[in-house]
Image: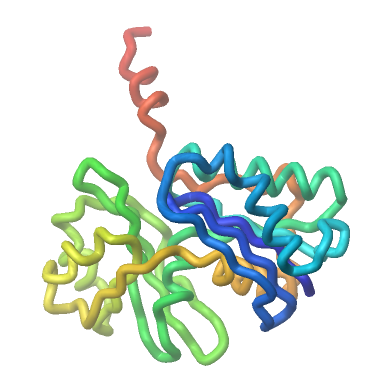
Amino acid sequence: MIILAVHSSSPHLGVALTRGEEVLVEQKLPPGREHLENIANLIGDVLRRGHMTLNAVDGLSVAIGPGSFSGIRIGMAAVKGIALALGKPVVGVSSLEIFAWQALKAGETGTAVIDARRSEVYVATFHRTSDTLVSLDEPSLIRAENLGDYARRFAQPLVLAGDEVVDGLAAASAHIARSMPLVPSPVACAQRAGERFAGGEVLSVHALLPLYIRRSDAEERRSALPS
């Protein structure tokens, strides 16, 4: 199955094209805020480098968050537009799951971490088997200072994987075995989607929803206004 994957929930915009286990093309831009300006060109460039057209793509995948609110919306809008126009199936993958898939080896348990600002982090914990990833809890938002308490909920020492914030959190608990700062991979997004496609877990475009966890700043400001 040929999958076009978009990861835009972090400062690193990335697009990948895979065929089964084979990585045809992966391209990631340096960190920036120009996702809206760059996403169409990046998708086109990846397709050209892979000698592929959108019509030849069998399915689409996109990182649904948590992460940058605007980045999530941009990536999902692009993927939804392609899926609607061409009648392609689509799968959404958590940005936390993508980090865990990148970092964990078979038999390891680890917590994926994404900086949520305001001294908070998004977290979710997974166990890697020989061929898949098992979710051990739901994605949540916690205070960074509480990561040690969170880690002690799990019997096995944890691998801490995620964006650059993990470097400052590695010493939070003796229950953390090692830490891995990573750039999120659109290939990992495609690989996780491939498992879902194989299992028939395909969503309609309208059922594909973002995973924000926290409300946006604008929403919080509106809720604080007197009614």
